[in-house]
Image (cartoon, rainbow, N blue to C red; front, side):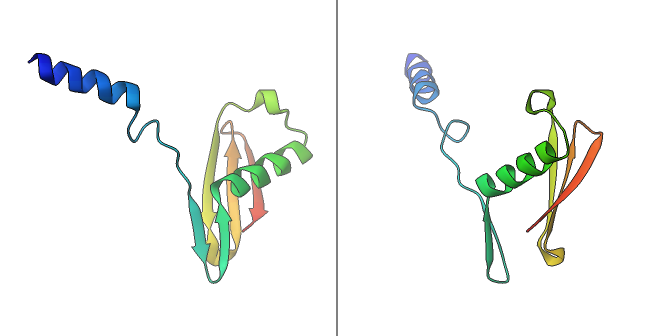
Length: 84
């Protein structure tokens, strides 16, 4: 029992999936968009529409590469779109 607890504590300190660095890239018909570039595009578009960065509490993003669009909803109120 002590061994199992030691292993669990060590895993919690080291990390695992939850704390690992992640890179997400969407590829479609020769186009690549990384998670970072998608989030930057959404943020810049929202800010250009007068949304304050400090007011953003939730962002839902819908990637539709077949339409070459990325749709987003901020705080379940503001809808926007950026190019894929």
